[in-house]
Structure formats: structure tokens, C-alpha cells
Length: 328
Image (cartoon, rainbow, N blue to C red; front, side, top):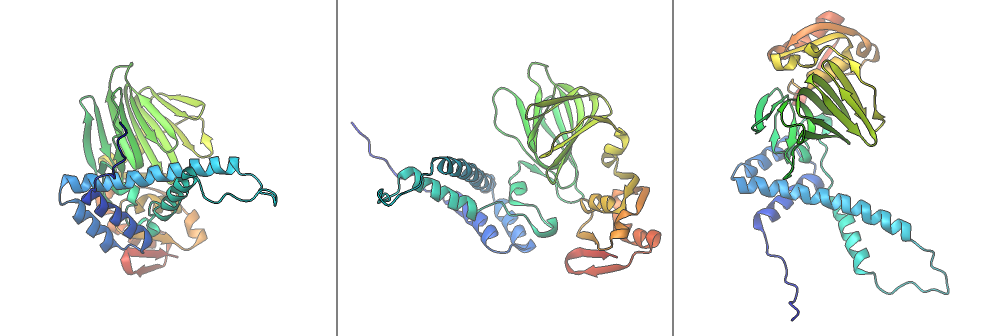
């Protein structure tokens, strides 16, 4: 006997969550909108789970849209005058078009100046705000310390401990069997370790991994690098670079509440400070960006950073609404 197809049952919470994604994408979201979304999610675990599910659906739609678009492009043919066009689209093409439209309409929001988290970051299992640190035990033998503005997800797997570093920075300690190592996904690469401590950082499409103890394996596409203590490797869309020795104390200074800079251009220093300090500092002077900085800054006193730059380099300070500060 053939059982007729039945429409899926409605999920009111998921519908509301999808409405939130649509609202934040199609409008111009403000800080108040993001705060309102957080209040909606805080109503219950079910609300929070529905929002994460909504974001996952759009991720899946985006992937499906790209695959269908590639297939359609590969199978395109020229229609001649003697070959009339088909009168109706196939269900496959209609489905592809619908998914493509959804993916195009509901791409993940990228906030202006990074003043609040993206939808992808908001959908993380664990997330820290500006200036916030957090320790998380993801398994009996795996612990994380999350730095400021860090988002991680815990994909469901049955045969391994897996973590996805969506954005930010995390210090990881793993004490696992070599047969079942920890796997961290970051950017377009993969980090694995069993008996090791390491620091991973994923910002603006660039991932850097520093081995603090033990051995860490970093893979991207068909390349692999093994890191030992005080070695670091970086990868991005440009590929996996060679490992280099680093000062692990500088890399992990954030865990002690410090930022340590040695011969760093001010532009790079400001980018780092912006991760911790409320608002946004913008350098509007090319020469000022190149000035070198040597110093140690306390994370809990970064409110004085702009005044220090003014005193050290004679920078002109212009304060704008929303915590934006221009240095010139």
C-alpha cells in the first residue's frame, strides 16, 4: 500500500527563530536588535536550540545552493530554434532555485566594524563577549579556555571528540588516547592532538596554531605539519605555511590578563586591542599605522590605551558615537 506524503508538522519555535534570521538579514540590524534576539533566546533552552537550528538550516541551504548551481552550470546546453525550450522546469531545478534563493536571501550577517557578533557566532555552543574569558570542560580529558570574542561549536560525533573554532582564540588541553585524538576544525583546516596543549586562533580567515606542549598535527588540503613545543604554523586560503619558532609566553599572555607586543606596528596593536576594548579604534593616518610599539598592557586597563597612544605618538583623538575613536 502506498502511503501519501504528509506535510511536516509545524514547529512554532523554529518558525520564530527563522523569522529572527530573516529580520536580522533583510533589515539593518542594530545593537538593540541583537540584544532583543538574545533575550528571546534566553527564554528557554528550547528557544536557544531553535535559533541554532535555524542558522544550521541556512548553512545547509547555502551549501546545497552552490552544489546545485555547479551541477546546473555543468549541464547547461544551448537551445536552438529547432529545439523549443521545455514547457516546465523539473522538480530538481525548481528545488535548486528555491534553495539558491533562500541561501542568497539569508546569508549570515556580518556586522559593521565588528561591533557585535555575526549570526554564525551567535549560534555557537559557547561564546564569549568582548573582554570575557571562559573555561569549558568539553570532555573529561579535554578543557578549553576561551579568549575574548570567541565562538566554538561542538559537532555531534560518536567516535571522536570534535570542536569547531568558529572565530576567536582558545587554549586547549587534551589528555586522550592516541587512537582517539581531539580534532579541532578551524577555517579550512584541521588540528588534532592527543597528549598536548596548544593555542588556536581563527580571525578573518587566518588560522594560527601554537604548540605549548606535546605534539600537534595541523592539516589543510593535502599538506600536514607537525608542531612541537614553542612552534607555530599559520594557514589561510593561501595555503599552509611552514612552522616557525615563537615565544609561547607572548602567545598565551592573554591568559594572565596581559598583551605583550615586541616591535609590532601600531595598526596591528590596535587590531588586537579592539578585540578586548569596547567600541572600535580606527587609525586614519598611514604613517601612524606604521609606528612600532614595544610594551606590555593590562587587559583590565585598556580604557587608558587611547590616551597612551596620544601621549606616545602625538596622535589626534576624535571620539564618535557608538564608542568609535579615530586616531590621526
